[in-house]
Length: 451
Image 1 (cartoon, rainbow, N blue to C red):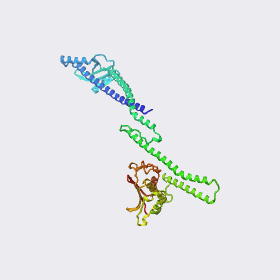
Image 2: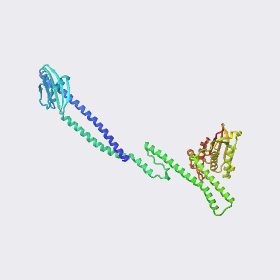
Image 3: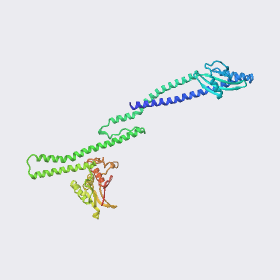
Image 4: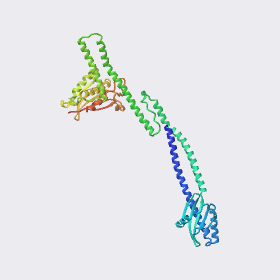
């Protein structure tokens, strides 16, 4: 069952239940109020009857005639019987279809005034002592008129319930279609989504309700999915690019080497080349495993000098970027050599520092890069500052994500893995890392743990 039909049925059922309960209250109130009026009229008629039959000898002719007039008006729809002390009928119009039992008369005498009903009549009994004796006046009214009114009321309420249910069903069906229209629009937009256009946000409804909040949340999910697809794509590109060169070198060397017999020196040379390429593949695999959190420090923390680590990193940087050597400024200003000793996994931290400096040189676009190793408030601090175009403020929070690349990198090649790998390595080795950026450049800071 669709939501629209369910809403229609629920609203119709709710109306039916509420109307039925209201009808029961109205019916009960009508019956109680009507019977109260009937018994009140019977009480009045009983008093008039007693005065008409029993007070004739005590009233003037004028007063008795006035009572007679009122009595005759009341008697049009009422039967009256007057019984003496022995239970014998003394007065009355003689039209009762049911006789009053001695038990009823005794009860009336004991209680003074009694009202009750049977299958055909409403009764009101009145004990009326008089100078002529002890009498009981019993007044009765037929059920038929009240029953007819009650049945008409039930019929009208039944008709109103049927018409109301029909109208509520039709209105609920129309209103549910209108209320479901934004959901239909969302379903249509979702059906248009593909892996290549997940970043396209769904149109938000103009209302400020839960549906708008749901669609806004779903748009956030789509954005995260889109980012994950981009990360996966960059991951595949990174792996294929990084693995392609060593594998091609290994394959080429082996193919050439297998064309004819080789000397032991040539075997040794090819073996060294293949081992070097395999070592490069292992290095790439280690990077990926560290990035995935599958490999941490297998050797435990060790102590080493931060300046020696920095020189090793710079050798590798100058090897890759020989043209940038004049642009890189290096300053080590720690007088006490003992303050340069830090703890951590050296190979991993070497990788992290190299990735940050490599990024600085790459995105500096031929501008100077300042690298400084110094103490700041008792903490050994390594800073790397470039004068590139910087990172947009809105994207700074995403640069730590694997394979994420800023929107302003242009044609500069990269995989987006270096900075995220550096962040993860620093976290695993207890090294503080922070990154600030603006239009004048980017500043990366390492805070090393000293002994």
